[in-house]
Image (cartoon, rainbow, N blue to C red):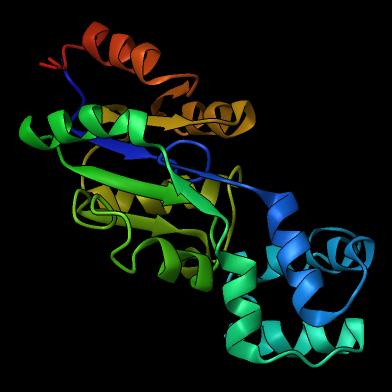
Length: 207
């Protein structure tokens, strides 16, 4: 039986992103060394993960960055430097378009901050958010993958039984957590491999 709902991860599935580029851009803007920026964003302070869990809003994320680095960049410029790190995975577009035609509802399940989400849905990428009906975002739900709470909430948002959800993510531990919650999940490697996984589940991909 084909899945009743398909969730895609965003980072390194629908879009590629560069963490080194993020750190470099923020460092150049703020005048703070890259190793300090890395520590503040994703190291011992990890304010980016707090931002992705919704524990900090835009203003709080900015204030914490300034406090921890002793810098004072423009807030809008900081959020832009932190966010403009994505490239659309164009090789996946034909498959997504085919799935749109199949009438299977599609969703995005992502660990993502508000500013990152605004950037990828600002119109620069035609499929985001147009091709998707449901968005299970860590900053709105309050936890990140692989916490099982995010999958349970995503199941509620999808409106179908857990066993009818198919999910693709590039990180194995996120796939394993989805399976523990009753989902059918695979690790993303390429559009061709994903197409084959879908065909095995009765989803016909005509491209």
